[in-house]
Structures are given as structure tokens and as C-alpha cells.
Image (cartoon, rainbow, N blue to C red; front, side, top):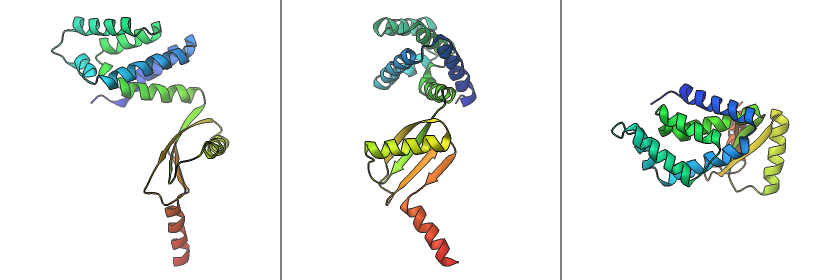
Length: 179
């Protein structure tokens, strides 16, 4: 497996170009389209990685995809660079790092939220606002329901965890009672 350091180089380079060219939204749409294509046809990435398939054939396949699903010049060049360097197989990992890199540069953080019950839009808005105040950045919530939680929330922003779960509160209460 190739190191995430290598993936980060591609992600940073694309972020540099996209921000300089002010193409973030169009490139995001393009990359999401190709993510969907690669999810729908997983063998495609394996084909691009297969050393038994000549490079010209791989380039032709990518060219045909680009004709069928036109994208911006920046996205097209990025996909071709990944193919030329035999990195297209790692498209998802590079795309995830690219998204994080772009968000960091824009002052946006993603908060992973686990809740015992689904959060309403109002609750999500209040949580987003509270986390924005705590972090000093704009916040994107990645919310999921965790049936193992009895109640409350567990929020992870970067390496910081805010544990407001009932289990954590019970554990703290147990510690205080034992003293």
C-alpha cells in the first residue's frame, strides 16, 4: 500500500490549482461524478491498476469516460496525472484528503457526530453553531445514529472528542461516588 504522504501530495497539488483558478465548486462536482462512477463500476479502478493492461488501453478507457462524462480541464488533467503515475486506483483516498485539505484552507472543519437518536435540523444547527464558536471555524456535521449510545452525543473534531453521552456521564458519576 502506498503511503498517505503520497496521497497528500496529489491532494495538496489539486487544492493549490483549484483555489488559484477559483474552480472549487466545478471540480468538486466533477470529482463526485467520478467517485460515483468508480463506486458503480469498481472493476474500473482495478483495470486502471492492472499491469497486464497496456497504458495505451488505459488511456483510451479514460478518454472515452471523459468524452461520455465531460469535466473541467483541471479535473481532466488531474485524472490523467493519476493514471500516468498509476495512482488512479487510490482515487477515493486522494479525494478524501483533497476534500480535507480544501476545507482546512477555507477554515472549515468536519465534526463526526454520533447520537443516540436522530437529530432534528434545529438541533444540528445549534450544535453546528456551538462547535463553530468552540473551534473558531465553520463546521460541517457528519451525523450518524449510534444504537450503542444510551443517550447524548459524542462529537469528534479532528483529534478532539467531546463526549456528552449518558454512558460517559454515568462513568463520571460512578468515579465521584467512589471517592
